[in-house]
Image 1 (cartoon, one colour):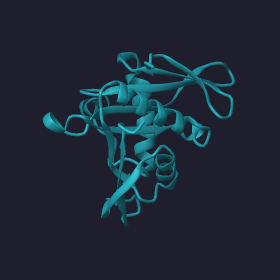
Image 2 (tube, one colour):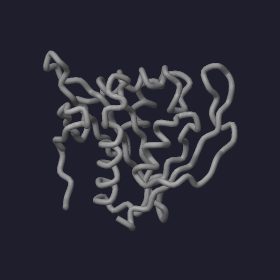
Image 3 (cartoon, one colour):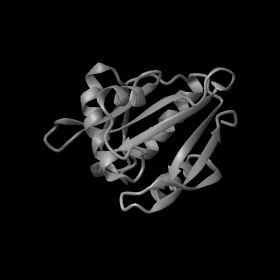
Image 4 (cartoon, one colour):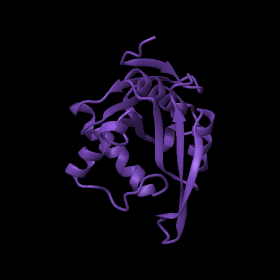
Amino acid sequence: MSLTFPVEAKLKVGSPVQLVLSDNQYIVPLRDLYHMIVDEGTSYPHDRFPNQDDFMDYWFRGKSTVAAYVPDRASAVTMAGAFYLKPNWPGRARQVANAGFIVAPDWRNKGLGWLLGATMLAYAKQLGYRSVIFNLVFSENVPARRLWGKLGFKELGVIPGAVRKNDGAYQDSVIMFRSLLEQ
């Protein structure tokens, strides 16, 4: 079965959601959402928001980027989350994917993270990737680690003290992996 965008779905709370392949019209909403995530400091390595060129490199150049949109109570459509998908390494190891996810605070614990993760896995397999690796899952990001576990990821190892937190203390990061061959 082939995944075709846009993908129409419903979250576990019943809200409709549309997943779209991002292009230039999605840059500003994604940038605004990512700014909020970087400021939280709980899931991405940036200690300050990147400039426009670095943001474009991180989220768009050489990547497939998918955005999730949901209508709010006033029927305005807002970006609720997104993910990028890219090769983790070049050349001979290009078949191992890497992905990054963001979910807006108002849309957490409503099934959007699971939908984005499941969609990424299907899309990665469709694009010919054989596996997915997450190089830097913050150890204290328990909701993310729990979600990836439910989606079949295994924790391969821990990098002690890899991430400096907003308060100056350090936390470990976890490397997580999932094969796409066993699906």
